[in-house]
Image (cartoon, rainbow, N blue to C red; front, side):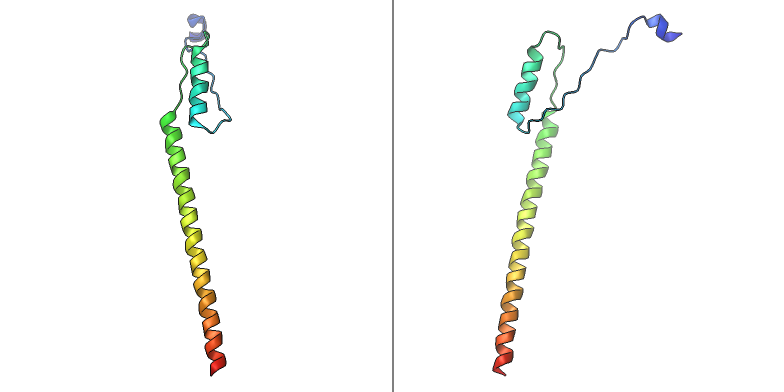
Length: 92
C-alpha cells in the first residue's frame, strides 16, 4: 500500500485563518505577527484580492449613490410637473 510506504504525510500542515478585521493594515499586521511565530513557515496574505474587493465595493457604493440621486431627481421632476399640471387645469 502506498500510504504505508510513505510513513508520514509528505504535505505540510496548513491552517487557513479568516480574520474578522476589515482593515487591510490590520490584516497585514496579523500576517506579520503570524510570520514571527517560530512554528509558522509561511504566512501569506492575498492583499491584491482584498484591494480588488475593496475597489469593487467602493464602485458599488458610488453606483448606489448615483442611482439614488438620479431617482430622487426623477421623483422631484414628476412632483413638480404634477403640481404644474394641476395649477394649469384649475386655470382652465
